[in-house]
Length: 426
Ligand SMILES: *Cc1c(COP(=O)(O)O)cnc(C)c1O
Image (cartoon, rainbow, N blue to C red; front, top):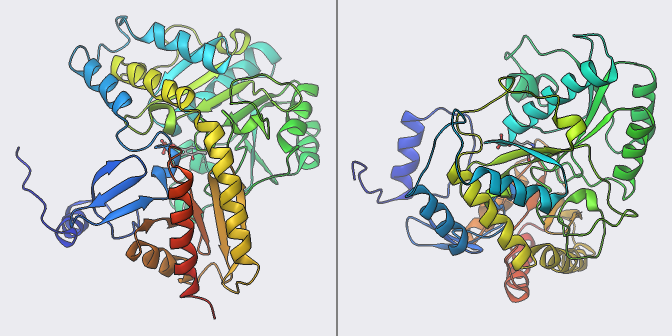
C-alpha cells in the first residue's frame, strides 16, 4: 500500500491540517475501526459513537450483511454509467419503491444532489403541470433549514458561515418560519407561483428542533389545498432514525411499514440519503409518483455514479437490515428510555436545560450562550470518557447513536453522559 501507516492521532491530524482544506472543525478523535455501535481510534481507545456520521450509520458500523453485499457487487461490476443498463439498478428501484410505497425512484449519490434533484423536479412540475410561467417558480423553505452545501442550497440557508462570499445566490426561494403552518399558508396564498414546500420533519442541524406533532400533517393539508408539492427532506430523519420508518410517519406505533393515514403524512417528493446505504457508500434518492416524476425525461438530468451497481446492491442490503432487525421499533423504545433517563437527570441540573427529539435523534440544550465553549468542552470530556458526540450549535449537543444499540449499552451511555455532565455543574 502506498500509504504510510499512521502511528498516532497527532500525526494524522497534522497531515490533514497541512494538506487538507479547512472546511470542517472536527473533534480531535482519529478513528481507524468501527463495529456496530463502537469505533476505535488509532491509539486503540474504544468509544460509543453518538453521532453515527450524522445518522448515516443507523445500521451500525461495518454491518457484515451490508459490507458483504457491497464487496460482492464491487468485485463483479462497479460502474457502467447510465449510458448502459446494469442488472442491479432495476431490482433496487423495485425494492425501494415497494419499501417506501412510491411509483418511482431517481438515484443520486449525496444528500445535496438529491435535494437539488427534488428542486429541479418541483420547478419542472410547476411549469409543465401547474402552469406557472417559466422562470417564475418559487419554492418555500424554512428558517434555519439545512439541506446541504451546493451553491443553490446555500442560497436559502440562514448559516452565514455557509453563505457569505459564495454568491451570487440562486433566486426562487421564499423562507417561512418553521413549525408554523399559518406562515406557510400565508406565503402560499400570497403567491401563485409556488411549486413546492421543502421541509425537514425535524431540523437536525438546527439542533434537533422538533416541531409540534401535527405540523407535518397540517403542512401537507395546506400544500394539497393549494396544489403545491410537499417535499420532505428525510436525509437525516428517515430510515428508522426517529422511531418510525420515516419521520413523517409521526408517532405511528407499527414497526415502520404501514400506511396508517391518521399518522402518515405522505410526501409528494421524498428525499433520502445517508442511512440509505447504512453509511457504507454515498447513496441518495428522490422518490415520487408518476405524475410528478415523469416530468423528467431522458437526457434531462443525470449523474455518472447515480444508480451504479455497488450503490444499488448496498442500498438493498441496508434497507433489508432496517426491516429484519426492526430498527425503527428499537429506536423508538430506546429513544423513550433515553429521554426519560435524561429528564431524570435534568430535573436537578443547572448545566442542562432540556432534552428533545424523537426516537434516537435527540439533543440536549446546554445552559450557556451559543458563543460559549461549554458544549464543546463537554464533548471533549465525553470523548475522554469513551463517547463521541458533537455540538450542533454553540450550546446544543446532538445524541444519535447507531440504531443497533441494545438497552444495556444505552444505559451505559447515559451513565457516561450524566457522570460527565456532573463535572460541569455549577
Ligand atoms: C446531511 C443532510 C443533507 C446533505 O447531505 P450530504 O450527503 O452531506 O450532501 C441534506 N439534508 C439534510 C436534512 C441532511 O441532514
